Length: 178
Image (cartoon, rainbow, N blue to C red; front, side):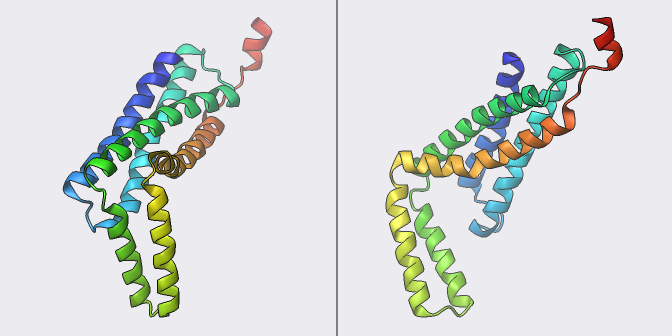
């Protein structure tokens, strides 16, 4: 199980980690607005490795049988490996290549509010909130925790779905023969 988890976790991590490098180096199509869509799409693509790994383990190493719990654990471990690679790639990119990311994001959000004819008081309140968040985000620990909060729920959801789909109990013939 360890080899399957490591291999598929690293592949998933490389998919999401490389996505960050691509976003930072060539900028996402559509800029910041579409970056979130493409980012979550890359997470789903990466976490497809969970399905592959659980099915491979079930069919090749577990005699075609796997419990929900075991399948979920495989997905969880892959999620943790891929998420850690994602967080490290983000921290490296953020601090080395896009330290002004939050300023650009804040400007985009404020512009959206202006175009939606928000009141100046609402715009000022949002700007103050974003500035406060930006100060906290400069802390690498806080930054890492916020980045984990982006990717972990996606991996956990995919792990649950895969575990539910791929679980397979022993057939009554196999139980009687044992």
